[in-house]
Length: 337
Ligand SMILES: Nc1ncnc2c1ncn2[C@@H]1O[C@H](COP(=O)(O)OP(=O)(O)OP(=O)(O)O)[C@@H](O)[C@H]1O
Image (cartoon, rainbow, N blue to C red):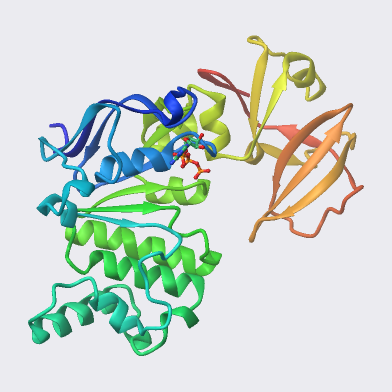
């Protein structure tokens, strides 16, 4: 049985200055209810434009957006019930009052009047995001991560059906980010909220999303589950968004001992082991990138550069010589070892 849909677009186009290289072109997508769908793509590919079209904040030049199978009205045409049902969180905290308390900011999302209702709803939203203890603090003095929790609490206070998150965790440090991602997943599960997420962070996309929509130059180029797109992307563009990898020509692949059949080989950083038995130390470490519990090394030999994941932190320095073994590589459509 296919999933119930909450939002759909049929051939929507929005070009700025009538220029096809800006905005989005002829996009048809289906957003399943109660799932986390992530829109991914390089900078300028049209992710935010698509989110604005899906929320009724921007009018398409052509095509339609449907919410529960009804054409979605534009927010500029005035308030409609579906606009309350679709909440949007951006990273700029634009709607928040910096000088006011957390409590004030979150409760401002509610209709005025019934004080008991306001207290009950605000308490519930603050508890849900684990920030009840911050209720009296001034919003402007919170950390980036705390601010994002408050903004999400405000967006959730009226129990929207759809929560749109545009790069919501950018300002949030790594530890705090995981906890926030976990909480959002819990809310999605418990409430059945549909989330549409725009993000650049591969770890976030792979761990949070149920579905990925890959967009390039305003068009959808690939979609599927994170597992599918991670393990068998159709495009190098998709692989590069989801994982640290190196793309090699046939001649470059030969330097790694690989005989390419198709002319292009992609090697994921995690599929290279350093210091295999008998591996001659012919590669030079050019960069050591800190990634938390592992490092990413950029190594070079005969002008071929590879990214390698290394769990033996601090073992290799810039200039170290290493030997490698490529455990497996990808020629589009096929994994080989
Ligand atoms: N209001 C606007 N006026 C003119 N051009 C715009 C406008 N909004 C977006 N664009 C252009 O449309 C294209 C897509 O922009 P969009 O913000 O949707 O990309 P994005 O994928 O969200 O980028 P990023 O990841 O950098 O936020 C870009 O070329 C951008 O310059």
